[in-house]
Length: 159
Image (cartoon, rainbow, N blue to C red; front, side):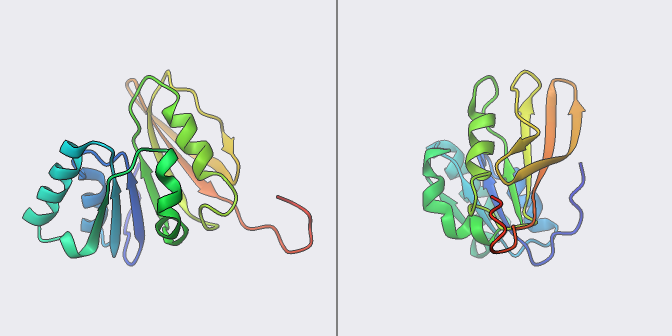
């Protein structure tokens, strides 16, 4: 699933691991990437890779457990145009992070969320403000593209 040119965008890479996805976003022109991982080894690998590629000034590495730690990312998420999420397979984390990101006010209208998951990790077609736009299957891996819908006009009473 190609995301094309990311020039000028802010990206948040959740469950970043080595940082490969966020670093790819930087190589495609993203201005800044917030990398998030709870594992010390993963964060050290991300920092090493950013340093080796001379990209450290365009990134921040966060030591957070998700989805509980999303509140500390409020500013980054509100300003992001793209969120990458690759939670551990085989549990409820894919659904949990999707539901947390779909809470009203977490992401701006038009923000895209790319969720990578195992085919057995069931997720809804809609989660709060997020709606499924596209799905691709690669063996047992499924990549879902969600997008935040437009904000409701003031006074409509719609969520």
